[in-house]
Image (cartoon, rainbow, N blue to C red; front, side):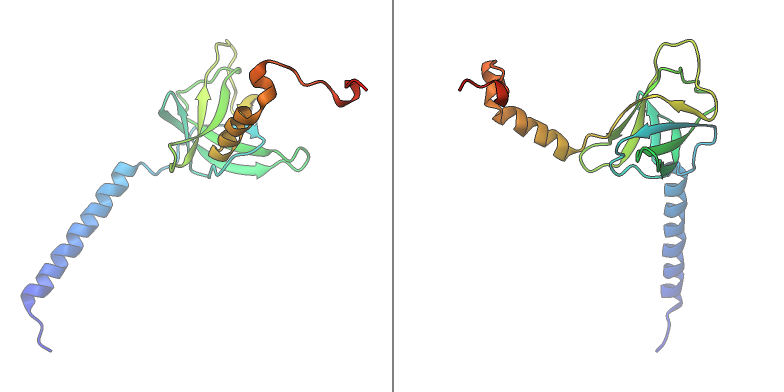
Length: 164
């Protein structure tokens, strides 16, 4: 089988262009972890939050999830985050795990409070809201729609107080 030098040259050009696209995609993707100070937050459920997920304030990336662990005493998820050093969080900051669209990944959304004191490195965010999955929300809607007693405004009487 005879090899054509033009085919070999064209194959090399394709490989170089593919390498350039990979390098460009890697530089744009911003895959490096944020280095800064560490804070922790406790959640009842994290709903698919992964190590390396974003930590955002007002939609702006300010940190990275660096780890997750299960607290063996409370059985809650302990999420560790690295926050940029120039972002100083008040002690009344609230952390919520939210979804980035229907098919998107999960991230931690921080809502800073107005306290004058700040969370120190290694500190804990006390106010948290757990992840609300789509299934949970649909279940709540179905429960509200099918609960006829709340539509009429009547409060159901306890079973022990029913007339005999």
